[in-house]
Length: 59
Image 1: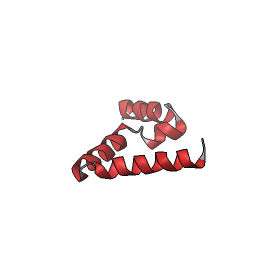
Image 2: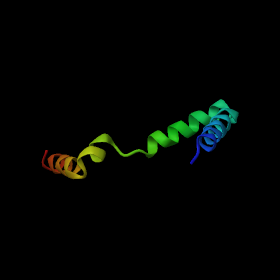
Image 3: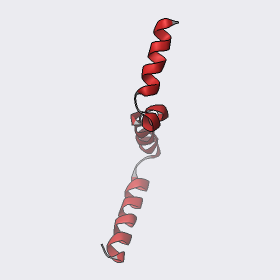
């Protein structure tokens, strides 16, 4: 990808983003945030979840 193509892509993306209404941008941001996995699962897999479920069941 040449520098011109990259610059064109970045500019188009930037303009698309700012043409959206502010409320729609906020909604997109919230949707992305809610779609992420929790940090414990991301970094350590299912082990922390399984331990917490085990502890909840015993307690």
